[in-house]
Length: 343
Image (cartoon, rainbow, N blue to C red; front, side):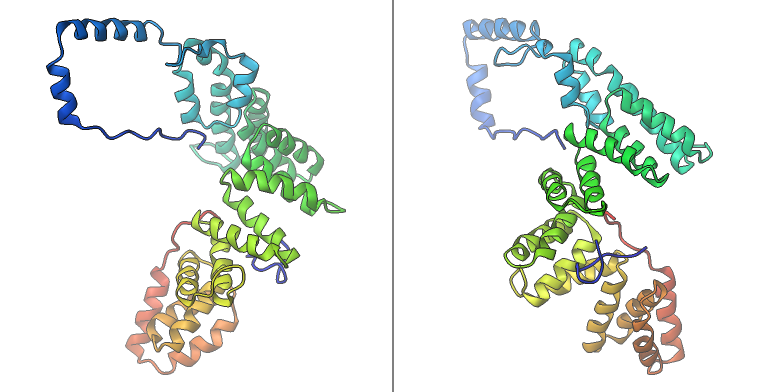
């Protein structure tokens, strides 16, 4: 897979936990058990009043009064676990969210048909049919997947239509895909693309954060400062290519403070996750420090993934090693497995 790096080299949970307040447990227990029977009766009455209004919030707002169309728009990009949780709020919500729960089942079958998983054969027609049915029920996740298939089939305008609908409903993946579509359009629409990338990036979509950094980086100037911050944000979110670019920013002191330690850290993280340029450069760094065995492993990995510049240096080092050491480093390379990343 072609790995995108600096712009001049290639073109490029909605639910949060509420904090639990700390309390003086022993004091409160003493206060509770020392309270009078009058206080206990008040607690009992208030408890009964609360449970008799299970479909209402503690501030008196009735959840059941939220219009169905507003609720379904809010929940359009929910995942299956989020929909299950929201459906438990009250019967009204459960009824309103039924189409979206059905869409999740259709989405599951669509992915099985698309990738040939779960005991079914790969079938793009059936996958697309499932995604379209899920999209009809309001799921932005299904809209994005339908758009992806239309894009693969060369029907880009149809794909963009699904991306846009998902984006307008607040789906970060839809926003990111729509932005990339605008960047690849003829002529490109960079202002529209940047608008959607910002929305997806602030929502935590790591690919959008990386793509936004690329857009800002191309402009250079003051934009490089922002670009470096978004590279770092995407790298912290596990985006492989952003790890490599973050390392370069730290190494050159461009957009981020000059730090060889941070540069080495992010270069190694990228190398350990399969970025071939990072494997090459990390191997060179190890070679310069005299770590011959480790250097050969990374250089061999880079060579196997197409970084031919690594082959010459690797062979020079191998000539200095014993046969036993050569066999050992090749065994390490054979058994190497990339760590997981977001791309």
